[in-house]
Image (cartoon, rainbow, N blue to C red):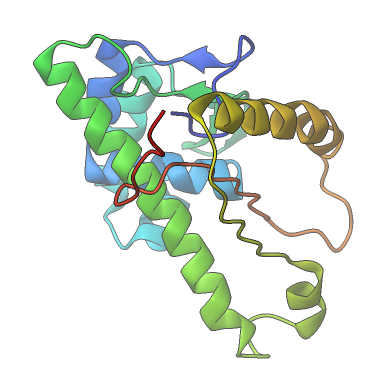
Length: 203
């Protein structure tokens, strides 16, 4: 399972120590905010998340200690530090890996929170789509949401996932790091998974 893309050779895998360090509600919220909105200060994060700046400052340092985020070089105003997520996709080990019990618990929590954050972001978009004061109709029209229901083998599911990655990631990467006039944070999601209440076709 992965925070940004499907697992590939160019994805950095988080180690057990960092995984346990990330498995905290506020640290997950901070990491998600830095991923979605770019560099922030402890004060800005505190306002966004409804926390004290002392609390966000402490947890920012813990995330940095585990090399999940870093201080933005050359970006300091007074005593305020700016923090950013370390660029690149991060893979969180899932249940397909051999993990000790405490690491497995942390993995389950982090992966679950990542999915919840993705779902929450999409639900917020759907709600905002019906409110012109929150989201202009032009942005709604530029968005997309598609679902395909198929019967596949695990090999076919892996093939679709691999093909999606190969054909879209290079194109998406062309837009990374840009801040063109009129741009705003955008999240692109792709989920491909077996339905838990389904059954395999007998051989």
